Image (cartoon, rainbow, N blue to C red):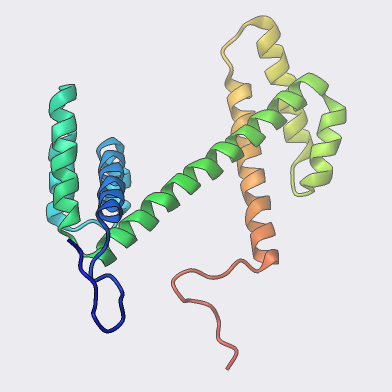
Length: 194
């Protein structure tokens, strides 16, 4: 029984359904933590005891035991303060968004590499128009060598090097675009205009 405040008529506690939704949300976060890599865990704002529990829990391979351990992990997480859970929730969402962004960038790079190899000078001219800092001769040589490697069925050295060069050029272009757009500074390090 939740009860009501006699003066205001408001409920004194959350509903049972709301508590269940919150518990299921924490269980889902525990599942994400169980699947996270060690590098990702190192970046998350986890208390040390909880981080150690997650690392120990990840060693369990049996399906039912892993499910039970995930539930235990969620139970331990619910004992943490709401601020810790909110920070963890935000960090997990941030890492998911970063992964999406990185995947999209890799797809763009792969798209340009295929276009350069398949279409040749026409695609190269279009790429150079979008990225004027690129070295035309280097790109042309890499495209020519990658095409020759493919035709001769040789190891893809130039193919891979072309990918690395395109990734560097496109990363520079993205950074320059972010600087021009005035992306907000992180950690409050924005210059002050006082």
